Image (cartoon, rainbow, N blue to C red; front, side, top):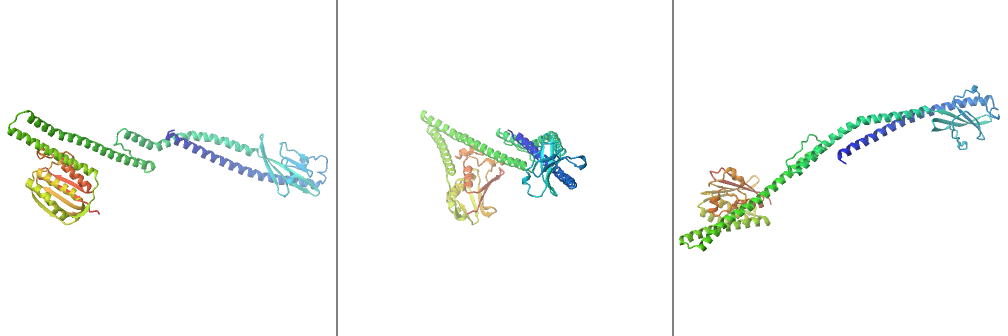
Length: 458
């Protein structure tokens, strides 16, 4: 059963039970009040007829001693009565309704007693009490007709049922509309969830209310947003892996094809010494590029699989030790190095930090720069290291991609320099391991600026 039907039936059942209960209580309350009024009237009639009987007994003490008691109109009894003697035998009755004769022996107190009978179209209140007048003892029973009260209750019940059916017929469409309004937002959530399941991850729900349904819609939108972000991340990761495999295959295919071709040529043909030397040089260069590629890939693999312990060291001492590796790189490319380091203790892995700096220096050298400035100082968010060069720079539209594996701005120049496009990818991974942030900016004309912020946590 759908939620719409459940809510609708619940409304109908609750409405029906509530309305019927309220009507039952109201009608019975009115009936009980009417019966109480009739009881008072019956007691009053009993008292009145009791006085009449006492008057008769006072004026005629032998009235009850006769074999048959005759009641004439002169006694003026206002309601049907029954008289029972001290021996509990009926002396007289003009009550036509069959009624229950009480056990007079149980009547030890002097209070007036009564009972109510209903059935066969007759409804009455019987009141009785023991009357003593002189030497006479008699039990008087009076009958008060309450058929009007019972019939009124029955008519009210029938009228109420008709009113109930009419109101139920009027209320059902309103309940149907209310149920539809309540479930409308839930249906929207269900439809949106179905569309997301079908692949429409940008699906959202318009939320207008601030009730529980509105909160559900808000939470659903947040969930959908997170799902879309995660799907995008997974898609990007899958695409990056595909690109990685494609680029890796391409980077291997070209040099290997050339190496095999030149080697086969040297093996199959008689070449001059100059031709052999050129072929060997090409094989050497491609071999060195493959070696660099394998080493960088190994580094990336190790960085992904290993946990590193960061230790706090002095920045100045760190760069003093790094100069042994930085200076040969600068001499190789003819670069003049400018260093301005402010003292601070930072948490790093020495080997990884050295690899990062050397890769950045090497990339700057391949960009034909003549000067490199390394500035370190404490700033907002942590210790900031800025590496700036005056090389060719990177086109603005390509700055965001240069940390991707195998991405090269100038592929032909990079291959001549044994590059594989993994240097900055390695740098980005090392920055991530250090819980740091990296920002690369360049206008493609006046060099490149690398900005790294190392958090100064424990």
